[in-house]
Each structure stands twice: as structure tokens, then as C-alpha cells.
Image (tube, rainbow, N blue to C red; front, top):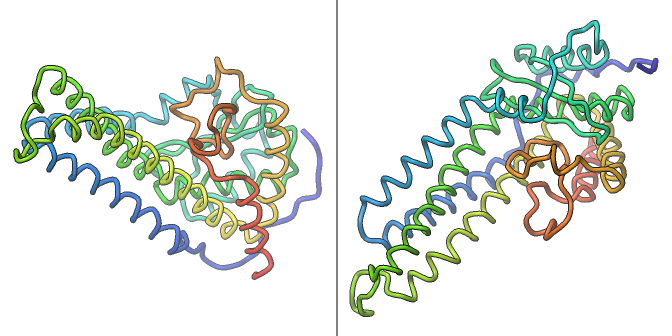
Length: 305
């Protein structure tokens, strides 16, 4: 492990909560997702399928939320490390946890050359922070502090719970769209335009438009939480440029070296500080906002400090 001059975190008082703008944006997106769900309930007319779809989706996502830390850490073969094995990583996490007035998270390393990091767990009392071996080799202490502050902000603001709520609503909408497809096949929407049912045209909208709209809203929620974690991480360290510098390095490195497809999973890509997956319609269907915009916002924050 490299030896570098240590720069202590500044004394800027208690850590402010996530900016009100990001909170309002996330609330509005969740409200929009709920409105879409209620519109589908109105279009279908009956409550039976709605309740079944919602309960099934809720059961799956509550289970994922409750056991997310164990599932994700096992998926990426993360290994727990102590202060003796990763002293700098442990030291930075301990300083940030104390500063954020939260319990010390468990610390893990993922053996991957692709630099990245993630946090998981259903709350501060059950949190785990993981960094790849490539990240630890690439970052200065200050940049590592910026990255880990971002991840602890996710835990502090219970973003896992927000993601679980969005996934529950999105999953229920997808299930209802599938039910609409089968109902269309078996003539369940064969009524006239004067009927209360959807009709064939409405069923087609349900099958195609509703799941896509739900997915886009979920992605927007994820991007909003990334901005919020950037803000919270910068506030936690008092140095927005530490995270900006780390993001610039991560962007450059991930253009040249990404996690192998066998290791990175689309279902968990939103957990990482930068998207471990590349290719496809990345700009539209990305769980993360553009890194250039994230850096610009952090630099503006530093200028105003």
C-alpha cells in the first residue's frame, strides 16, 4: 500500500442532509411511478389482479431488501478484510463513519482490476462497504475518501429502501402488463369503446408503454439518488473536488477496463459508484447520470464553498 501524506477531514460541523432539490425530485418520481400503477389499476377495472401483482412484487423486493447485503457480497465474491489487511481502507471508512455519526460498516474487497466501489445493506446498522482492488491501487487517500463518502451517503440516506420501493412498483407494473397480454390473447379485452374495459388498443398500450415508462422512471430515481450521494459525500468530506478527481479517474479507467460480463450483473449495476457495464443504449438506459455532469456539479459546489 502506498504511503501518502494524510490530510484530515475539515471540521465543518454536523453533516447536512441530502439537498432538498434531490429529495423533491426523487419524491416526484416515486409519485409518478405510483400514479402509473394506479392508472393501470383503473384501466384494468378490477382489484384482484392488482393486489396479487403488488403483493408478489412486494414480497420479492422486500426479501431482496432484507438480504441485499449477503446476496450482493456473495455475488461479487467480496471478502471481508480487517485493519491489518487493508489499513488505509479501514481507516478512511472509520473516519467517515464517525463523522457521519453512524456505526462502523463491515469492510470488503472485491478482487477486480476494474476500479469501482459499492455499499449495500438495509440501513446504517447493517451496512457493508466494498472496494475493488483496482480502486485501492489507483486512488490517492483523498480520492478514496471522496469515493467512500459517496457510498456511505447512500447508506445514510437509506437509498436501498428507496430502490426497493421503486422496484416493487415497477415489478408490479411489469406483472400487470404480462397479465394484460394473456387477457388479450384469451379475449379478455374484447369489449367495445363504450365498455369500461381497456379494449384492444388500451391492452396494447398496457403491454408495451407501461413497462417501458416504469423502467425509465426507475432509472431516473436511481440517477437522482446518485446525484444525492455525490452531494452528501462532498458535504461529508468538505472537499467536493476529492470526489470529482476520483470520478475523472474512474471514467478514464472504465473506458479502458470494465468488469468482465461474468462478474458484473445488470441487476446490481446501480449499486456501484460508476456503472460497471458498458455498451448498448447506455445514455438512455443507464442507472447513473453522466460523469461529466457529476463532475461539473461538484466543481460548482467547490466554488461556492
